[in-house]
Image (cartoon, rainbow over all chains, first blue to last red; front, side, top):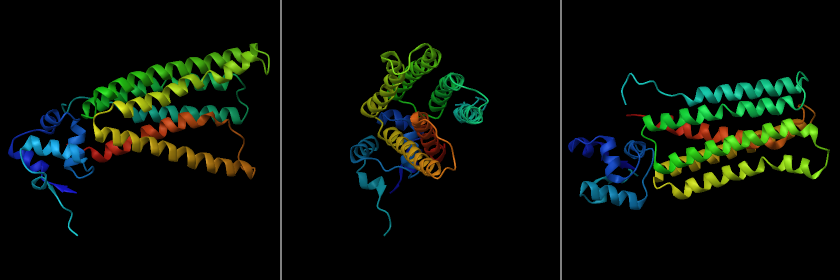
Length: 65
Length: 196
């Protein structure tokens, strides 16, 4: 699943560590999600949406069919 | 993390551990050493798992892959490994003093099961206590990789032995091999995920 995490993080001038601390996860978790190597669970996806104050579908994008 | 900071290399310790194990096995197979020397050497070689675990922990800290549950897990693993070494070295040194088939011999043989159960409990507790779902996923995948490794090696060795192509080996090798597989599986995932 694609996502806009890296762009949105850059817009806010947050490092991966900054975001990880806000989410309460490891920096490597943020890295894995950001690079598309790991798809977060629904609860974590909602937490990410809460941190960015955006709906989930503006962060995570459907894969092209 | 700074560019000048030396990155700990747990895989180097792992490689040294595996090479030592292979040399001990070869020396035993070709009758260069006799019991209880091999089991004592193996137990001493297990001591390498301590710096290996410490290097892995330091690397996890530097790579931002550490969590409170993982710190507790690492401490428990080190403790269990020390008990395992004591059980193996103790058994190797005492076995010739104990009568064959006696209750004491049974106790010596079963003693390593205590730290082994401790290791299984440690892994179970870690999976229960880890709040970081990605780290939990990584540990689960690593454990499955370790399981796959012992299934493949155990099965192929069994057939090679059945056809008289290789000698018999004691089946307690499954635990160290599983632990090595777990480490390799987790390192492999970490290598794939290292981008920033």
